[in-house]
Structure formats: structure tokens, C-alpha cells
Length: 103
Length: 238
Image 1 (cartoon, rainbow over the protein chains, first blue to last red):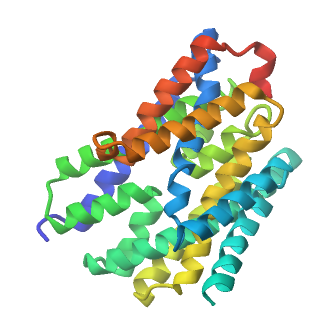
Image 2: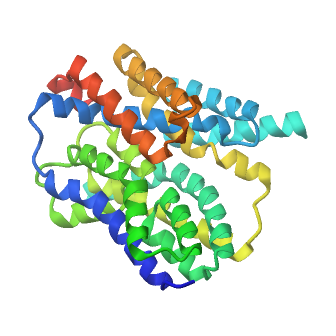
């Protein structure tokens, strides 16, 4: 190992923090432009949907248990379950499904 | 007082699923970090200072090849550029008068998960809600790293498998309720998922890293949606 591990960590932490900080520091006014405003309104929905699917299908040991978790989360979320509830029950669904099918 | 304590407590509650998901991911990170030659302190320090799974795994690979500091900086920039987009979105959720210290602290906790949960809260965002989310999820992230380095053994496969859906379950719980009865949001979510699937399957597109895929699809889909369906003032608050 040639470099100093702590310097590596500080470099990466510095870059990552600046990426997160700069918009929060410079965008302090409310944006009036309807297009930009709408764009930023849609950002989280697109980002989270893209991150969830299809990645969730390969997150567990098996496609079928992943589908069990995915389906459970969709149904509970549609019924308005809290973050905690949806998330934990989806985990349990995967666990129980894998236990039942593979013992 | 209660406009600090209550949002903080709510943040803690909503942060528990994040912490569980983080534990599973950072446990694996801890194992890899140990193999890369990091001490427990170094691994936990890296987790606490960075809070970025892809970035940290990438860093381990670079450290293993004795990369230069510039390479490290550029790699982190590329892997983590999506946080910039998230911070832009989050900047509009804070009250205009939110002071510097709050902006500096909130910025530290902009991860996929903390962003996703906080940006979809109704109304303006109270920084203390973010601090609640951050206090449990960062603890989970660091604790998982520590356990991974120290034990060096994989958690039972079944537990990892189950915990791995925690973060996705949370994302679903964030985006589905507002989309209920809203054809536009439903359409946007379904198109995003389908295009994401397409990107994962098509030969050349599947070579694009996850971080850039998120940026490309977000800019394209949210950009087109904003053009076709500009949001009216009232809808923005909801």
C-alpha cells in the first residue's frame, strides 16, 4: 500500500461532502421558474423508482423470494403503511418465503 | 422545543428501516475492508466520514491498487455525483431562511435513503427530522461496518437476504402513497422502473454504472415530465 490510508479517506470524504453541500449552499432561494421547480419535484420519484427496480429482484438469495418481498412492499405501501412497517414486513416476507420453500 | 424534539423523534422512527438495511450492507463492507487490509478503526472511520456504499466499495478497490489521490477524488466524484442532484431537490424543501449550520449538517447526511425519505415528507422540511434519520442510520452504518471487520464472517445468508430488501421496501413506502390516485405520478414511476429495467438488460446500456444510470434516467425522465406536466404551486407542497 503506497498511499496513506487516512489521506485516502479524507480525500474521498472531502469530495463526497462537497458534492452534497454545494447545492444546499448556493440554492438558498426558492426557485420561481416553473420548469425547474417541476423538474425538482419529479426528481425523487424517478430516482427512487430507478434505484428500486430492477435492483430489488437481485437483492435476495433468489428471484422468487425477491418477488415476494417486492409484492408485499407494494401492497402494504398502497394501503398506506408506514416506512417502518412496509420495510420490516417486506423483510419478514422474504425470510418466511425462503424458510418455507427451502427449509 | 417541541418543533425540534418531535421531528427528531419522527426521524428516528423512520430511520430504523434505513439503519437495518445499512447494517446488512455495511457488514459486507466491513468484511471486504478487512480483506483490503484496513484496521477496524480505519474501516469505521471511512464509513462514518463518507456514508456512501458504492463510493466506499470503490475506494477499497482503489486502495488495493495503490491509486493516486487524484484518482481517488475523481472516482468519488463520478460515483457520487447523483448526490448533487439530490441536494438540489432537497434545497427546495428547506425553509428559505434555514441557516448555514443546518445546511452544513443536512448536507452531510445526503444519501440515497435519507434523501428519499426526507424529500417526500409533506410540506417544508425541518432539519431536525433529518438529524433524527441521520442519528440512527449513521449508527447502523458504522456499527455494521465494525461488526463486519471484527467478525470477518458472513452473517447467515438468510438474514442478509431478508435485510437486503429493507431499503427497497422503504423506497416503495415513500413513492407509492403519493402516487395512489395520481395517474401522472403512477405513470412516471412505472416508466422509470421500465426504463431502468431496459438499461439493465440492453447490451451497451447495461455497461453504464449504477450511479450514472440514476443520473441519466432522472435528468431525462424528470426533465420530460416537467416539460409536459408542469407542476402547479399547490401540488408542490403535497
